[in-house]
Length: 345
Image (cartoon, rainbow, N blue to C red; front, side, top):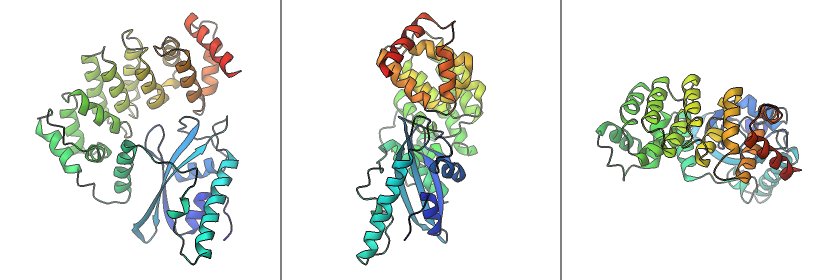
């Protein structure tokens, strides 16, 4: 057995079909060609989180989807956001060594056991597992989990206070299908009226989907009804973050950042930077965000952590450094920037 240049080459040679998902900023599909370029060191990772690429590989035999495997892998990134080639090569070496070991002991290749004790494997949170499981079932063209109907019945019922028995897997299954006409209508009816806890749960899973325009409008109105609630703001941001209705998303973010009662709340700030980072490509919005970040309630260390994380997003480093050099920047941002460079020098 010869070691392959790319993990995806190895899996393809094993006659498999492959789907790749980001598991960091949101659980979302990554085009295989894009992932192969990243794996080969040709592209920065588009969804970096904590200077790491968190990915899930779902692969199955081309002739039998019931024979599928799931790997959760974390790959460290270099300062340009590209994969650390030494880490990639170490992972492949450990994988091939374990497979060779299996064969030498007369066992057939077991792709799941081949990752045992591999330092580049991670276990997602319960919430990430639920949404990934829902997406995997849909990708494999299988029925949703047994909990799906319970979530649908809850949304239909109008009795939104009775949510204690609602399972997170059912919520995830419903959110994965939020673009289906029937499910979208249920969300439009229920989301404006849900109590805060189930509302937060649904928003947490909706962040991984492409929020339909009408649903984005309904969520914007929910925020506007209680604009001074940090919890409502961050939940609405999360749910709308991946919408194609970018005008609605920008309106929401601007209204939040201009609200002095919540705009420096650390949870609100991280909702913007971690989930709705694309809106920070807009210069005016980004500078408003940076001003609020420099005044955040958690202090300088929080400012530093958010900036470092954002700088790994492709194209964001140049934009932020340009804002740091802007002679019209606020005094609070100037002070925060000075302390930031002192801490990293």
